[in-house]
Image: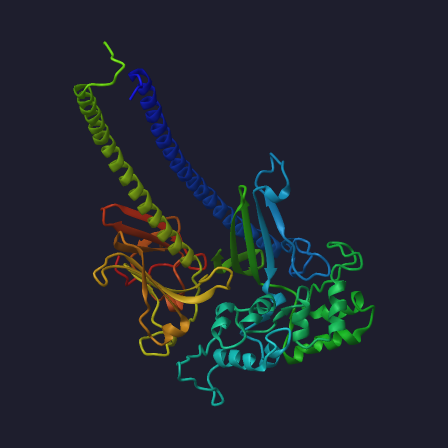
Length: 333
Length: 217
């Protein structure tokens, strides 16, 4: 070997420096992952709190609404100006960084709240077999029968299944997801979720559907004429399609439903409204108020955004100025 | 020092290798301590992570709790009815709507959490079964969610007689089937290391009621 020892010292030093640098880089990388994980958890906790806050804000809005007027319609504050012709309530968006309002709306921290009344849909615990079998709902007589068998007290016609043993609930449904345990086509579930609701303590007492908020498919499933329903829905925000204007059509009292809609939706023609109201005698009674609401609160934070969603169902009961709102169900997602 | 360009003598190499060995020995004993600390830190943080995940899961599943059936005759021990709900000092059993698969609708499940010994293994165990399985009174398979769990203790909040007084806490929530679920509960888990983790968990759809008079405090 013909090297000098001065040269070998440099090589050794370089090696040492390289090893130490590799170690330092490994430690730094490990720590930076830890820091990122911790940061993510912090953001997630904040997002959860924000979404939870959204639900309580919605409850507050519902409370104020009950004190303001004795009827509910889609022009109310809670419905946040739905897009005409009034199928789904709008979303109410609150940015958390109002002061430094910069950047595009999609990337800012915010909570989006949607309040939907349940009386726009059919109460699963009160629905008849005929209604459930309609194409707007399950579209299958077998599934409608299976739902009835599971819900109502047993009778002789009910099939007994022993292998595997199947035990019906024979009581009211507490959650719509219970339908997934009933034999039937699981593909109809997303559609059912739009038009049916199930709440244990909602006594299947009439009235059922709020005439001011009911959806098209719900009214049709209850037996109303589709053309009449289209006209009724179009009349809600009026010809100008704007909420809160003079031409809006809403029933403010249960005794004036026929009169109101005859005048503002059907140009004085009583017949279609009377037909619609005849549903009364069959399967539905109309109301002008809603007492149960689904609150969907979705919080977004950071970029890429951490998202937290909460679905809650609340029940509002008002006695004069005294309004209480109880949470019936809550789901974090 | 006089250096010959021809190379090193055997003695020089010997001295150099002895010096390098001593240096490495010192370095490794020093680093070994560091590595031990590093291992401990990693283990602790993994254990903390497990604890947090277990508590978070419990919290999420309790938040989704529902009153499934208010009729007392729907619960019992014979097949065809559901096992009774439990909000006890050391065990939980309730019905919740929980996500079981990503992108699939949530399902109604009967869940339970207990902390104890089973098949020679200690730990916090969770079970989850469908309503049909629960009705046929099958023993559900359990899943170990926190091996470090030594004991699980739960307390439930009650409204005080005097409205301005703080909430009262008791180790048992009576009649969850009929009277509804508790609104607030304090979950406390004692770990094998002797440490204790505590958290107040809310069931938003639960109720706050006064403690029944005959209940032991």
